[in-house]
Length: 178
Image (tube, rainbow, N blue to C red; front, side, top):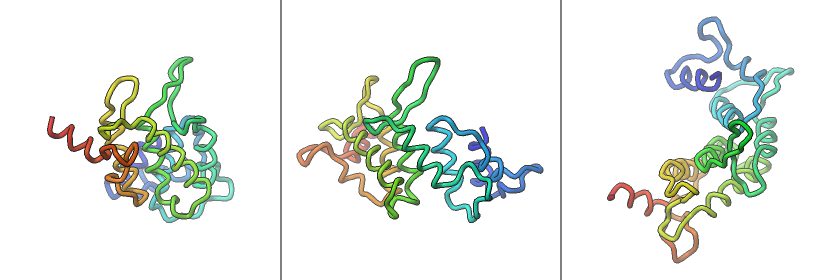
């Protein structure tokens, strides 16, 4: 909830360091972030915020890169746990790439994690360009992947299973036409 509040204040043009007597930035620096979604949205919160992390900050962009690399599955995906079951989430995997976008060009851990995530998403891609999970065509993951690719400066029209396949944008357009 902290990350959602932070992003909402930021989106509304407010100051996350002074909202209702709270400094959400300081709270974010100290927050316990155990899940991929918390880390991803923590990174999104820090995007575009001009600040120097405090000396005792638990969460900085670098520490969050490391946390993401630890939470990333061997196949490049990210997911969530509900009860005793871990679920892979293609949309969350694309969101990780978006969160890493401001740091992608610098290389290092951020680029490595993002490229591995994109590799996973490519394994879901079908010849018609769509991304398919065990539940069928995943239009949300497709949209999130378009956003992620644009965020890192890649053309989603070039995101293809192979050279003879349709692109991701072809698949998104086909959904509009259906």
